Structure formats: structure tokens, C-alpha cells
Length: 218
Image 1 (cartoon, rainbow, N blue to C red):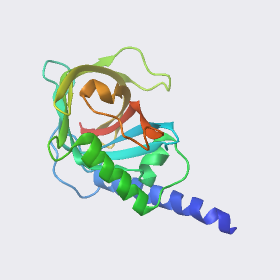
Image 2 (image 1 turned 90 degrees about the vertical axis):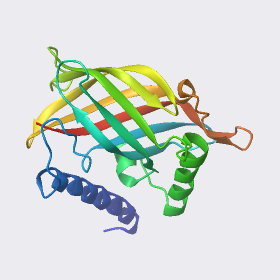
Image 3 (image 1 turned 120 degrees about the vertical axis):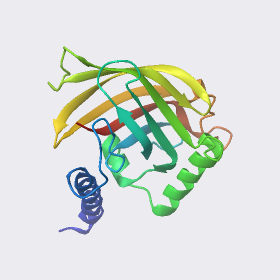
Image 4 (image 1 turned 30 degrees about the vertical axis):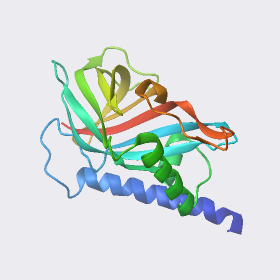
């Protein structure tokens, strides 16, 4: 093995280890879940943050603190995202959103701190909530051939609420409905100022791409 291959191998091993840990929490030992409960240990949200100027592209990984989801009917459930768990540029997050390379721990900590304190203000707004009015299966399958579902509800972030509709794919795996969906949002729509420094020469884009990877007990 050549020396230049070592960082790539390490990155792969870390990603595999994290994935195996999540799989163990799905069908291994874990909390008792009732139908409709979201597995908080396995579920994640990943966010792609684009750059402006001389900035860097980033990936964020976060967890839920609460979640329920039922197909059909009104008040289909809700997801509460714990913003204090959001971490910037974990290897798993960067791999999930398709970014190459990795950041050292010091840089990850600095970016996470800026995100918590300057951007999200987690001391005042510690959670984001998706109140789901309707969660319905669709007749048409997705491009991958998997079943599709439509979410309709209201997303609250930074004290601001907006309607949210998104289409996600869902497959039955090991007694769970495994849902993957993506939506785009603008930080300024939620009265959040995108991070910038050096008089704006370095910063991140207003638009974010949010990926949900959710496991719901069947």
C-alpha cells in the first residue's frame, strides 16, 4: 500500500464503522420502539453547505431528539431536531453529501462553534421542528424504482415557521420504514444570516440542501 492511500483508507474505515454502528442500533440491542416511533439512534439529518468567495463547502451531521410518523390521516407526526448535536464536516456527513477530503478536528470544532453560536444561536433556539400534517404514499415510484411518499407540514427554525412539502423514498427494511428525502431551504427565509468573514470574501451560501435519513418502526 502506498503512503498516499492511507488517508483514503482511514476515511473509508471511519465511514464503515459509523454505518455499522447505526445498523446495530436498528436490529441489535436498543430502546423498545412502538409502531410509528422514529429510531433516534439510527436516524440522521445531513446538510450540504455551499461556499461563496474563498470559502469552503461543508457538510453537517445532526440528530433528532424526538420523532413519530404515521401514514395517512391528519397530524401524521413530527420530528424534532436537536441543533446542539449538529457537527460540521464529520467524515460520515461529507461522504453522504458527496464531498471529498476531510477536515482536521480543530477545524471541525471551529466551524461547529461558529455554526452553533453565530449562525443558529442554539443557546436561544436549541431545536428545529417539522410538524407533519400529512404523510401519504404516492402511486408513482421514484427514479430508483422505490416507493415514494409525500410530506406536508410546517417547518420551524430559529423562531420562524414556513410550510414545507417534500417527496421522499421509503423502503421496508428489518421491520422499519427507511425514508430518504431531500429539500432545499434558504437561511434568510428563517431570519438566519449566512456566515461570512474577511469583509465577505469568505463565506457560505444562503441556500442549503437538507438530506433526511429516517428509520420509522413498522
